[in-house]
Image 1 (tube, helix red, strand yellow):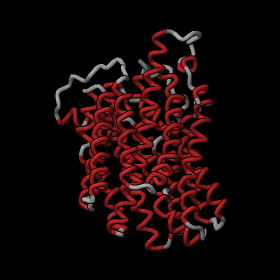
Image 2: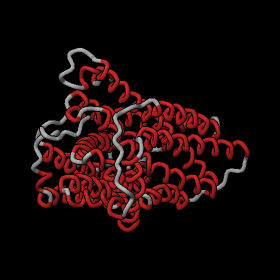
Image 3: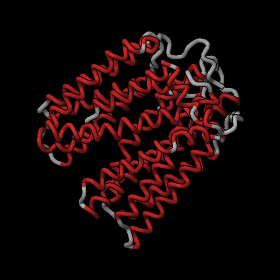
Length: 424
């Protein structure tokens, strides 16, 4: 992986690694490793929390509450988090959020070992995690463009995504394996990983120019205003929202595994991992060969292809064909993610990135959480197959409508505009 992203590839003009370029490279790699540890720990934590909640209550409703209670704080705090991220040092915000998650993991460890773990504690912890990640996600998103030059941001984001997808694949598997020893053991490992991640973030340095605007309703709403009036940004984030909202099938995988494909829990695990495997493979490809031209058409094409893979998955009665369709959906989604994140970051001034990233984080959370609700609701009415097919058709329709409604996005050629100037 390192050969795809090195000091030489960080900037095309670097023939020999200068002290400044090595400093930038090391800061970026520290962030990358910190996110790797933090993401793996978060995945392990949620596997343990979900399993423990179901073990305690046996209620699918309580499992849904765990996800919902993590989304609601992000929605409630969107105006505050963006303003804070633009005013304070972003690496320290991420480190503080990770430190709080160390405390959360230790509380869960104590509750599991002491026998006082309960439903109310797990739901309360979910609210805390949602509030913490409401600050962490926009800070992380806005930090990467401050560490690398604008012209290599697509490569940097693809490299970051490769690590995150690896953590998303390995984290749940490792969490489930350690949980066999005991819930407390899982939470202890999570605390160690969160702690290492926080310490790494404290070592990150970059040129920080804090916003000096006073906290007023105008500055708090500036991120929403900016996204609404910049059609390339609005088109990119809303495209992802509606594509995942309509086309996501994650919540229905247990039904497909049991009732359609007739496989056991092992098959469900493979189905859940398949999109991440496809996304990981595509992120490695994009690290080596980043998207440079015909950006708008590639973005809309990736979303349309994602819709087609959902149609294939919905119609399939073969386990391996379903696996392949899900892997291809993950690959298409990764193309969309890298292009969208790059466009949003490069089209946004650095002083606004925190507030815009906060709005973007709400869009991402809404698409994932509300998408699961939409899938479950339609599946209850018409069955899982019809639900996925309807979502696939809806995703294709969204790609066609965005081609017409957002011509500036559809006609975007270069991903990194010549006069972008977003790099340090």
